[in-house]
Image (cartoon, rainbow, N blue to C red; front, side):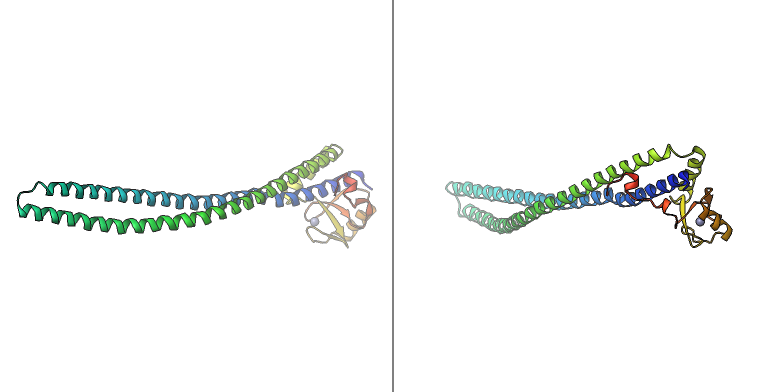
Length: 249
Ligand SMILES: [Zn+2]
């Protein structure tokens, strides 16, 4: 077994694990934001309805006040009746009182409608508030699960990085430099297994003579097509298990 190649294979295994984790992790912040947005939308709907309720109550109070004012004016008109001298004046005050009464009835009808609105909104708000509480609890629980998940992933990534760092110091610097540049340019895959004469990553055949050389396991070789480092899949020395890397399941 070529020890340096074995290190490269191990590094690749760690890289694959990391990429897999990162793909899952990238979604988490987005999902947390979505939960927060849903929460904000629900809260906004509740606040809007509450403001509508407050407005209707204010309108109702204003109508009641204006009715009381009109009743006061009727009272004052009745006092003036005792002081009038002519029938004409008397009739004028009666008409005035009638007008006030008509206006009071109109405003009372309006106040009744507004009161109905207030009652509807109050009922609706009770339901909305109950739903909001249920929703809030559920969203917070979801968010907590996602945050815990994200913490676990970060911890696992840290663990993988630590193991990778230990391996990296053991690799010849020139080889490591080539490996890093391949990782960067070849979508995170710098090491490829060869099976039945075919590079399993780029799926192209390597010349038979090269394949025999690879099986002899004497020098570190690169794929003539994708330039990734190669190892023969049939060589058990390059099978990397989690335990080999000191990783728990
Ligand atoms: Zn290849």
